[in-house]
Image (tube, rainbow, N blue to C red; front, top):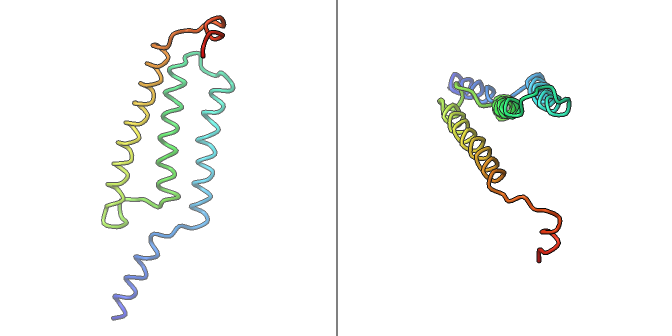
Length: 123
């Protein structure tokens, strides 16, 4: 009877995080936010598509950091179901990022430029 309660207590404690884990996640989040901000505000790279790609990569990495450090997802907990959730999240992340870029590109390419005279005649 005691071995079962000890096992339950140990498995229950495995999902909890420490202050060190939260601080590590916080620092990584700050770094993963500061680098794209610096890339854009400092106009570091000449190529806009490369800058956009790097921002998207840093955003994806930051989502994984949040899932690991703040949502406590790993391959060992809950029989691997959190790993399935991570894979599902990555698939959805790719769909959202690629879809957003596709929509923004096509909106920009297909919008008619408006002159100030045309804007005055708008209802």
